[in-house]
Length: 485
Image (cartoon, rainbow, N blue to C red; front, side, top):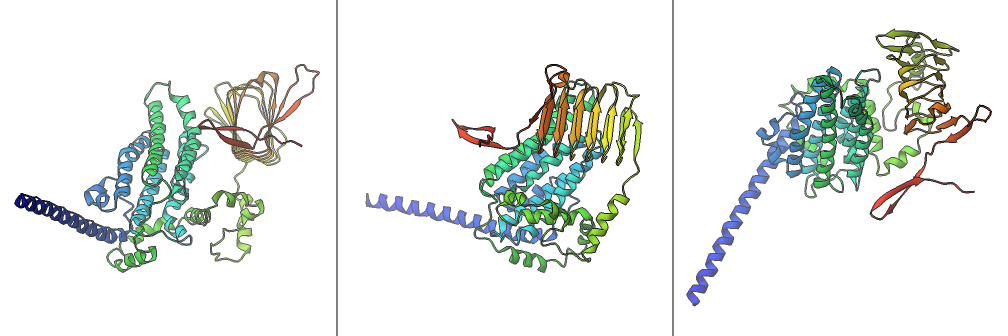
């Protein structure tokens, strides 16, 4: 029995020794992979390759840690189908999707850095996020209000800000879901417009919106699984400065790639978006910082941005803006009436309009526009102190980025959308009082409705801007804030 017991003990010791040897071998393998990753990240991650699946073959996913491997799986499963769907929509969507790919590629390099380094200081973060913020800005700049697929482009332009989750602590997932909801506002318009239409063009746009929704939904799932309380930095990693110094020592081989990489950095939008993004990332109170912005501060350069010219240079550029504005025009382009760049025009009357035509009023100021017959749709975009009077719009009317505008509906309208507007006044006839009024990111929205009879006075109603949310019975209940004297 003593012999049997010693044999069992020796067997257990041998098994423990074997498992320890396996563990040691695995640790050596991980160390070797981390060293290879540290060397490979010095090249900046070639932008031409983008988000292709070459990472797995290069061993990047395996050596960069499980969170980066999961991010690569996200890209492979959802970003590649999104880019394929964008190619079917058209060149505008395809170009924007390339910027989206660049943003995800930049975020991957950031996550590789997080897997190798300890958490950086607040001063270091803006530098680390320059590439991501630049790509986000280029994605949003690709949204053309006058494009045929504006809603498709804007759905992506609103949702791409979800990549800002890396600066949200300690709950980044709600930020992604908020950006997804903003994106869905425009994506739903596309689905409603094309879901019952035949043909490949309609199917391509539905596929595009669904593919983008899948990207955002699975980005939220990825963050929830891998970075639930914020970016998971390596507690035992090297400091970012030391990691960057090591990258610079291995820089002699990569000098050829930097010239092509320098071309995008010369664009004017890249620096501006990077500086804005760096300000938002300067501290934890992002929203509180936004609340304290004053209108008069918008013309000043962001803090921390070096100004090479004298202070008079910004004033000179702002003064030259009106001179560079395009000449006013009112013209029918296909089925769209374009009323653009009018200033202080007392009366622009569109009389020869048809039901199948649309009216697009763009960058008008101090102008009055009247549409004398029923049309399909009317849009006011980036107008100031402009008045619009129209009979009826079959699909609806939309106001976006407008200030101090007034709209008078003399007949009927199905939907009125007010997006990112200030000081809007809607005057509704009795026929239009059943319209759906959708407002988002707008302030000082007042609606004036007709009385029950022609003798009754008009009544003015203010649309609520403040809301309070309470957690009740397992869910949040949102109600309008009531002010009591």
